[in-house]
Image (cartoon, rainbow, N blue to C red; front, side, top):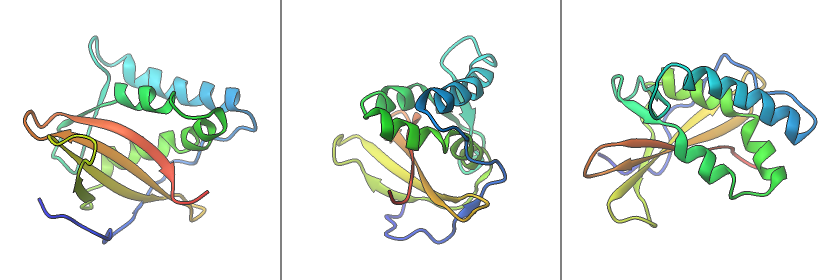
Length: 144
């Protein structure tokens, strides 16, 4: 795979950001969306990616990573949860791909997305080089 320094294209998502004034409101709506994905399988929750021709992207690492953040940062990131899931399901644009500085046997793919109101966000997916297993790491807006 090529190492990319800039993203060629930004995927425009149809779903809106999750609304809510408090963290509890936003988390409740994001968990509800997540539960619809969880109900589809008896094992580890996943979605299928258009970019990788239907390969699975597992979602469990996302919640572990998110819970390491402060509450205000969690709320900021969770607002883009539905948008990030849609991007992974439907985008065929090539992401930025780099070696993971924290793991020698891993790649990090970064997809760019845009909401209807013009806000840019990123979705990061970690890939194990040996097994080709892919995990959703993070969803976050471009700037604070």
